Length: 591
Picture 1 (cartoon, rainbow, N blue to C red):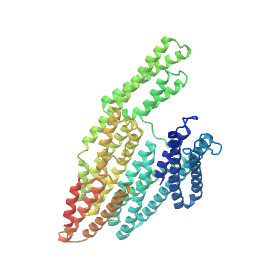
Picture 2: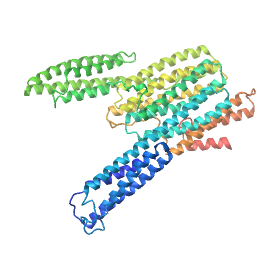
Picture 3: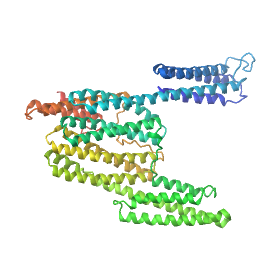
C-alpha cells in the first residue's frame, strides 16, 4: 500500500543522510567500517522491500505499470550501488584502487542517493495517483447506485439495491478514512472529516426517507424530504473529491471567509513587525486590514442575538482601534523621516496600545459568541419542539405541526447565527471548518425535520413515517450535543489549554474505549446497515397486518425494535451503553 511505501521511505531517508554526512576522513576503526557497511546494507534491504510494494501496486494497476516499473528498477539499482560503495568492513585498505568505496568515491554515494530519492518520489507520486483514482472510482460507483435508488418503485427492488449501496459506502468510507489519516494539512483533514460525517449520517437518512417515499408515493413532503438527502449526499461526495484532487469546480479558488481571530492575528503581526522594519508595508495596508476586521464585527453588532452590553463594548472598542491606529500611523510616518530615540519610544508605546486594544476586542467578541452559545445550548437541551412535533405528527394534527415547525425554524435561525459567530472566535482553522459544518447541518436538517413531520401528520398511522422523523430528530439532537463539545474546545484554545494546532474531528463523537481496526469497523458498518434494512422489512410487512394486536405481529415488532437498538449500539448511539447491555438485549431477543 501507499502507507507501507511512505514508512519504508522515511527509514531510507534517515540512513542515506547518515551515509552522506559521514566525515571525509573518519577514524578507520573496525567498528566504523562495520557501521558504514551495516547502514549501506540496511538501505539496500529497505529499498528491496519498498520496490516489492511498488511492483505489487504496478501489477494491480496496468495503466501505470510501465512508469512504476521504471521507477522501481531505478530505485533497486541505486540501492545496490549504495550497498557496493559501503562494502568496506572486510577491506584492510578501503582506499585501495582495486575497489571503489565510499571513501574513494563519495560523489558516487551522493549520485546514488539522489537517484534513489528521485525514484522513490516517483513511486510515491504514482501510488498517490492510484489512491486518488480508487477514491474517484468508488465515488462514481456510489453515485451510479444512488441514481438507481432514486428511481426504484418497489420495496423489494430497493432492498436489493440498497444492500449493494451499503457495500459501496463501506468501501468509500474505508478509502477516504485512510486518505484522511494521510493528510498533513489540518484544514483539509477537518473538511474531509466533515464530509465523511455527512455521508455517514445521510446513509441512514437515505434509507428511511426512501422507504417513506415508497410507502407513500403520492406524498409531496415525503418526496421533498428524500430529495434533500440525495442532494446533500451528492454535495458531500463532490467535496471529498475536491479535497482528494485538490481542485475546485470550474477552476474556482476556495475563498473561505476570514474570521475576526485570524484577521486580528495577522494585523498584530504586521503592527509588531514595525519594530524591525519601518518600510515593509504601507499605512494603507494596515488601514485596510483594520477596516476588514471591523466590518466582520458587524456580524456581532447587527445580530439580534447579541446582548446590548456586548454590542456597546464592541462598538466602543472598534472606535478606539481606529484612534489607536491613527496615532500609530502618525508616529510611524515621523519615525520614517527621522529615527530619533524619542520617536522610537513613542512608536513602541503606540504599537503596545494598538495591540492591547485589539486583544480587548478579541476578548469581547469571544465573550459575546460563547455566552450566546452557552445560553442557546442550555435553552434547547430539552428538545421540547422536537418532542412536540413527534406527538402532534402521530396525532395527525396538521395545525399544531405547522405551529411547531415555525418554532423549529426560529430555533434553526438562532443556531445558525450561533455557528457563524463561533466561527469568528474558534481560534484554529480546523475548528473554523467544524463551525461551518455545524452551520450547514442545522441549515439543512431543520427543513428536513419539517418535511418529515408534515409527512407523519398526513399519515399518522405510518410507522415508517414515524421512524423517518425519529432519524432526522436524532441528527439534530446529535449536532446540538456536538456543539457543547465544540464550545468547550473553543474555550480551551482561547484560554491556552490546547495547542495552536488543536486537531478537531468534525464528527465530535467520543470514541468508545474498544479499539477496532479499519476492517472490523467496515464489517460492523456493513452488518449494521444490513440488520437495519431487515428490521425495516419486518416493520413494513407487519404494518400491513390489519390485526395489530396479533401476538405474532407484536413479537415481530418487538424483535425489530431490539435489532434496531443493537444496530444503534454499533454506531455508539441509542439506549444500549455497554457491552453488558448489548449481551442482555441479545439474550432477550434470542432466548
